[in-house]
Image 1 (cartoon, rainbow, N blue to C red):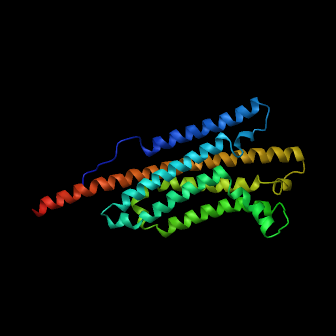
Image 2 (cartoon, one colour):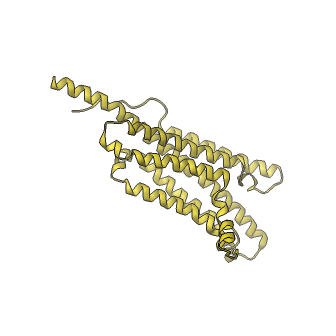
Image 3 (tube, one colour):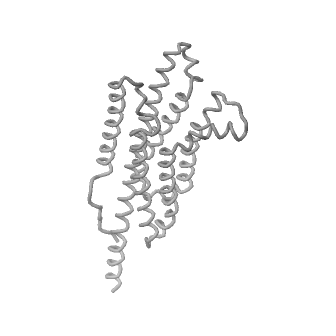
Length: 248
């Protein structure tokens, strides 16, 4: 028997995406313009403990909140398919919250220092890449979690395009993060120290911008999943009541 479509009210996922992409573009423009007007490096306001970092943390917290709400709905659902991936959304919620703390407190940036100190490894341009590689490992773990729940997550397939684009942009972010870490790679292009510095600066800006944009797509994706979960929860009582009426 067909169930009534009870789509939740509010802005669409695409509209929310455009709102966050606009805010991302605005934040990046302000950061560059403010630095140039102050006579500082264009990357100055993209570093740690700047408003760019805090906006990134905010976006990750939004992802965590939507994932937590999906977990709460699925945990209380009577649909066995939704119950199966409730744990997945709990992991997503805690994972996104951890990443926001990592962004704010720079956990992964301290990995290379910890590696040098604990294992008494001599610091080189290669070992300095340890913290950037860790970000790539974060993304790999996320993809493994998604792959492990792929069949169950098909109910949320309308959101897949947001996550696919987000992961692609996230991969670009990791690439530029590695390239802009030090002069290891730019020295292969030019020996001009001044040009190397400019290349690292702008690759760092591209990396931070890609991070914000990827997070914007993840926000839209989790929002779409929340809307879908809410719709399914609304449909279940309707379907059950119609079934009871038919049996009576």
